[in-house]
Length: 220
Image (cartoon, rainbow, N blue to C red; front, side, top):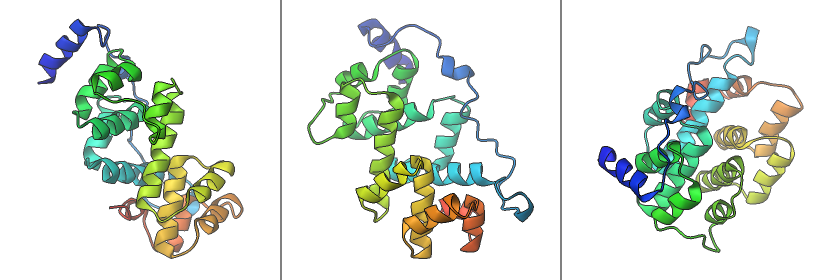
């Protein structure tokens, strides 16, 4: 179906006839060498723990398999920010996310994709407003991430804002909330373990008898 729709979109001027540079990118590679906590190398598995936990949040939020997310990043070379935005717009519009992402990879702007998907910047949707205003993709992806976090964890927006103020990004805050929920403590305590006690994410998980993989499985 995409083979039919993409030429049509090219004809309508929604995308440019360019070869997607993302197809040659390795930025989304998830070939992690270390996936288990090693006390002798405490931070080795942290990248894997953060990635698999965040992928679990995306999977739960947009009803997509983690395997597909990883393959889209690895084989498709889809930019992580584009992936979040594409999935969000697909959910809002009911359109096929693969199609929207294909249009994006071929040069389509988010504004034009929104218009073609029948989406308008509404006053109660900060993501659509930000896209319509031409906000940076990383900022929009951050808004989507924060929305997913407040959807799946019982945390107030002020807590998330405080964690951002301490320098944590949305992926790390996802880990903090997952671990805090499992341990039955406040997110600030998990954050303090990492920031003040200099513990690794994998080390904190091990303290609560979790492997890096199991942290991701806390989100369903």
